[in-house]
Image (cartoon, rainbow, N blue to C red; front, side, top):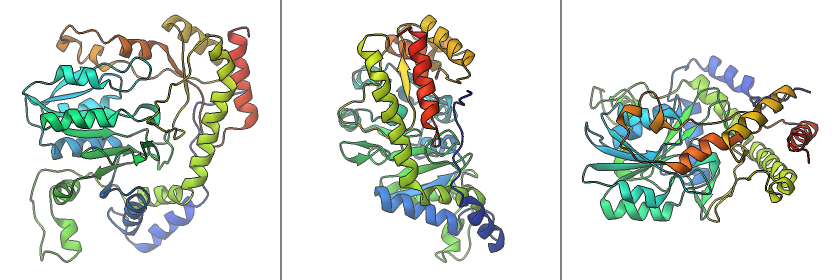
Length: 376
């Protein structure tokens, strides 16, 4: 049996919506489907204002502009994240200060954040790894005491919550991904959520290439012009139509993914109880949204050996992030600090195949293969 790591889920309604876009004569962005997607997220999660983007990377770049990052400003973020988290702020001239993760889950440690704050610190970026919430009360308290902006990189975290609050709605800005490996997909896509009213008007101008064209189309100004810096951040109606088909099936998709997560957890719990590896320790303040499933091995050698064994069985499991602080780009800028928990998770996390239409026998085959590796 061959088990892929990911298989994009298609609801079957995508072709209908794509045909509607084609017949409408409106293919470029900020049309009817974009508005329907915005309305879905704002109504469902109470987001103050949503802006679809061509990727989560673009949403992060918008957030960096909205944070008014200037050359020399410092931004604190985890090292255990994707490069887009750092690139978005480095493009504005920021100095990145990488913080370690918590010991038991690969989310940024609030205590590590506090140690890195200087008079130059401008913002904190948090990453809700695997859809599990960071300790947002502690982080927002730190930010409030030091007058810092907070950006939630919620690329993994649609439909996940912190003490009942939707992730992406707590910081000043939230960013989401609809890449084909995520819960809700459109191939490549993302979203910026603006949670503070005072940033909405500027966000829309940045989103529209630095112009007030959106206001012009609403009839609020009699002509539009160049108002601010910006870029072509908004996606086409084709992308929005693909996404809307997924949103129509939102509960079905999320139900399947959460059930799959729980199935893996229950099947692998007896092995973890024997101390063979660790399962994700979801904090009490967090929820599971079915973004991914991973185990934590005892060492990098064991992780790599297990990866090789699973691949020999036809199972495509993968490792995840390499620490950004020790990357080729950044290693010359290291300040001598050790980030031991970051290193541990980078060395030892192994992600198992995870996708909507994963069959029962595929899950059982993966679980049994892990058992055979450990000779259980």
